[in-house]
Image: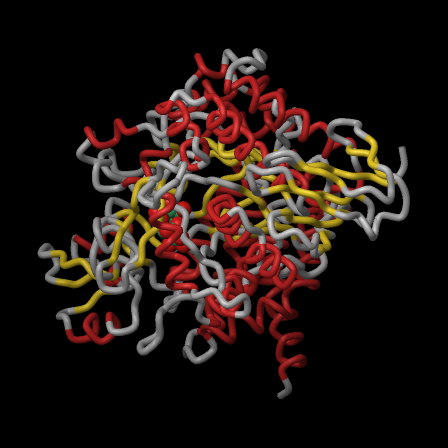
Length: 634
Ligand code: GLC
Ligand code: GLC
């Protein structure tokens, strides 16, 4: 029997079996229309993952029954949104898109506090709000919420699941899409599945990866990376209760799930659709690269990872099509790209741009940024970057060594330099970063720090030198101007819009002291935010610049979509790109004035930001760290 025929036969057989789970005829019609469209892909993907099991058809049916029942539980308002988004699938490519991310507790105490801050989000013109992990998690150390104990219960310190759903609706009414994490590589060791596994339940032990002794773990370890070599060395944790070694890629309390078990796929699908039904419109796929393991490999980014995400995606298109996936793969740029596709994750962090913005600030040269972006910025149709300068995690220098080699740069040495620079050890450095997880074996290290501290503001304030302070503020404005104007969704790490500095208080908290990422997870400073309309303050200057740029972006259709042509400005310090074929962006990464000749501009140009006119045959002179958005005409 050929596969297409088998798919058809299976679908015809399944439809009546799903009927009891789809009680009314309207639901049945809508569900079945989507099922018709997506079933062939679902069948092939699941066959690829689980086809060698004798009980494949049983699992296939269970997965679809789960999808049907979660579809039935989806609130009517979200079903209406589903239809709207099916009619306008590229809504997230609009020039209106503007993102912010924050911790519920650190930003506003709890979910009610977040609701009360909606006017602040509106001031920033946000259309996308990522609330950091907010589900139940272990009380002491939970890796900032990235160890989830229940995907259906909001952490009681923050509020309730009902409040979260109500908040999602309130945000939506204000034109803001809620973004939530799906921490699906692992659960915490306090999740009921883990507890049952610890109590000896073998079905739940099979939800995780467990080993009787070190034989297999030692074999796996030969090819695995250590993500947290300082705070959580190795990838396995011994649990004396059950005399087993448990796979723990991250911290010892974060247990990796076993997606080779179809029951895990189905259970996690249910948790995912639950989060969709609460009202998440974008789902951040946390630590996506790690979800499939195979002996003899690095167990990162294996082909099955993509198969799983595509299968989840196709099932979401049936039960909750308004929700989009965003991938979080902070790896080699070629690997990052592999997740980005309409049928996989249409949205992705752009870690290469992020890291290279900081690289360019350190070197005052844009060659690696320009070279990498020219090669790697373009995405498939229907996909979009999330461009950011900072997030809650460390900065890893994940540019491609091959890109560096082509410019006669040695990637390893360059990373050593960047680490020296951003920890302030390099002579002349303006940065105040903190080392994150130095690995003595390969000398790998990443950097923690708030954007403003990395950009020199903390150092400048210590020296009391006005010039340094001005440069630091200009650097903050400059890198934000790039994320706001480059193709994609700009994402502000809230606190950066008021130039908040490092918070060293984490060192006094034993649950945080080992993890320097807490230096850039401060409690939001509302007193500082109160200065945001006073341009004589650092907070006011950054806030007013960012809101001006955001407003311009949202008024300029050329900033929609991803179309971004990087061009050689013939000045090593100046980055240049054309947006939507209309706007030429120039950005000077040095503290010295730089000239650029606009040979390619068809006519006079006007800077959208300052209104200044640039005659055709004269060079454009950019002041220290200046950026312009040039449109043809006067
Ligand atoms: C992601 C999160 C990070 C967390 C890790 C493990 O990379 O961004 O904060 O530590 O996953 O969940
Ligand atoms: C994830 C990210 C990595 C990050 C880590 C936690 O593995 O891919 O970049 O450093 O989580 O910080």
